[in-house]
Length: 72
Image (tube, helix red, strand yellow):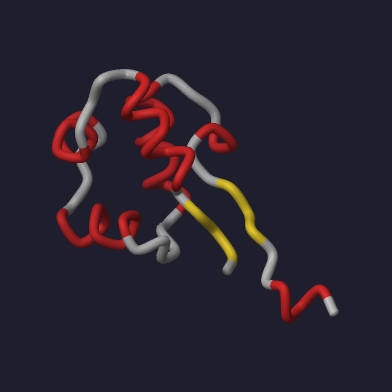
């Protein structure tokens, strides 16, 4: 599977925020927000802006989920 942004959505929920709030405070584009929603890769600078906006570490907003096929 690769990278998952599920921890990001958990962070937002814990802070009582919506995706639109993140879009505004982290100055994201709509296409970047769509990529995050689909667990697609984003630039490191985007993660940096998200972490700055949420005052957290990268590990708080992304997780690596290995492919089962690659483990064999």
